[in-house]
Length: 539
Image (cartoon, rainbow, N blue to C red; front, side, top):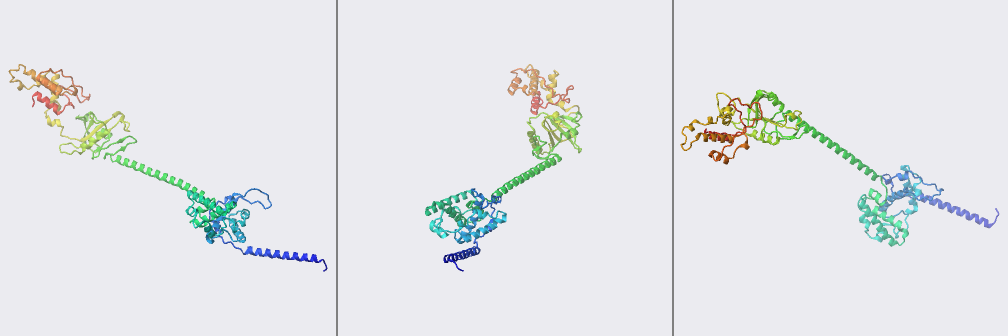
């Protein structure tokens, strides 16, 4: 083969270059294949980072011309990758990976984990540069390892105190971030190159998450605060807290509703049971169909219903009327069990209301004596009771006693062979003589037998005494004279005025006059009778 020597030399050089290129390519391929990643990316599947930022993102093609800055997805992928780098610092004391091959291998493993979420298979190659994770001596204050960090900044910095606790608390997170910027400024002052500001801040982040924080770089506090990852757990926890609050309030409302329903049922049943038991005992407050509380006696006396009393007395008929007491009319009645009772309808009393009346009933019920008629019970009717018939009855009070068949007190105090014992009351008897113009018949004849010779008119003196006694016993209290005036009348110093007529006794049909029989006045007391009897010479 003949030819130019220069051409042969050129061919030889080309063959050598091709051989060297092939050898370098094979060596490089072998090196890349042999490099393994020292970091574990299984945390990518555990940390609840917001994957929606990358799910709809598709990196542009290499030949596509775009000036758009890298999206938020790339920043999330960088922060998520930083968790592994911080863990690598904690385990090896190295801030970065030793060579490019290791960085490429780690990014390849990182992409394989992201593929589990059906994300684009070129996200890592588009967003992350393998060279930015390879160690270099002149990046930030010539720091490559943890020993270099301590040599530049000392064993303790503001990060060691501010970033140690749980950073899920917003206050603690703010303190850690401020400490990170402070350490960044210290590193820049040592390095002297402001273009290294980003790298120095990354070193501060890795140190805070991998070395300082006691919960580790995979914790929610470190991931969200130090690396700035958006976590789904915050939204989920807020939703869970809101759901728990809703369920808690609903449960509390249902519990209160059930409790009040049970209380209402208890009070309804208790009131119904006490009504069925004659509603008879205890000064307890009982609301009857929404009306005001009613007091009830407490000592065993029965609270009678007005319907029972009306039935027992045949609607308080005149045939069952047996007399009048100090404050009302007395009727004889027979209860449904056959018991004969005396029912007193109180019409004149000083009681101001049901409470005062029931208090008196309680006192009377406590009195026990062989000469006292026991109180069997009572009944109170008010205008505002729910019974529709009460509008006609008004306010009424009733006392129920055992019936005494041996007569009343007048029968024993003023025995008489005939007629009504009420005719023997001296006050009514003297009044009847006065109205008939026969006052002299009230005088005892023995008082006129031996008249005083010095007094020429003994009959006039005695008549004056009778008139003064009648006036002092007048049923109208306002017409009665005072003791001083009465004494002057008795001594004759002043004249006895005309005696006013007595008022009709409440128009009750049982109060009538037939001849000398007059009704008993409730206003006449024992003292008044005694005074009149003294004036008439009966004592």
